[in-house]
Image (cartoon, rainbow, N blue to C red; front, side):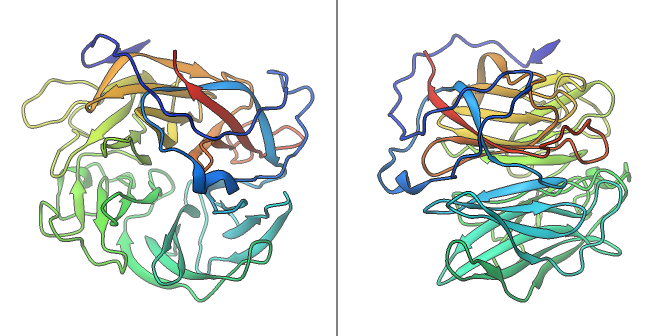
Length: 381
């Protein structure tokens, strides 16, 4: 069962065409995996920004196989990507011609339980900086590293800790990071099994943080510290739709997983409530799913559509929005076809890339797992 706060009449969508690669056939049961293809994204310079609602068209292409507990993927201009592997702290480069090679290892990663090397984000500001969220011996932290070299031979330089002290535990470690339209770095944290932390604006647990690129709390934050929003249990997805709205996916406990519209200073209720409550002073989710249907991790946004990658749910959820509200009913794709799904990202050519996550100890790995998939998107009708 799925619930939404309110129903809205579906709005017609005028959508601009996005340059996208055609898909190769693949059986839903994955008895045979599609051939691996090169991860070309060179069409980005001429691609038209996406608006309106979008849907998946055709079957996925496989960009990479044999990944070990992948957690985050960052596409690169001109083709290729960087991929984080949670348990060994390795950064892999997927080259423009489809090869996998090691670009470095993030120092100080201490894995265990759900913690390890998590989210990645790229900033080009007089140079290229790769940011990473990872578990250390006593905490979770954010580091940045210079990204050097040419495509096919990328390497990371020395890591600089820009923000630390985020609570760490065997579960509920958050981990997604992303640069927003305002140029600030947004960081998703979990409650690290401390149920008091999300309701304390001075605690870093159970929050979305907003930082300057150097790690300082960003100007304009509501409590004059690093915290942007509070009352979260375990946020693992951050994305902005075309109208600039920030969305976050959140793991529930036993009943409801959530998609939240994030606003500065808002309190999303955990652990006082799970799912919709209608309580004064608390912000309800815009969409909820049972934990068996979702357990969402990474999310992506294209135009006005948010795409959630489901772990336990083993599917993608496509959620259409208008002016910060959900319209229509969420639609599922890839249900059960590729197992657990960890991350989703829109690349410069307008296609959707998805990481599977069957090697994390909770899935049932198949011989080629884990995979990086590419899916073609088309305007919704």
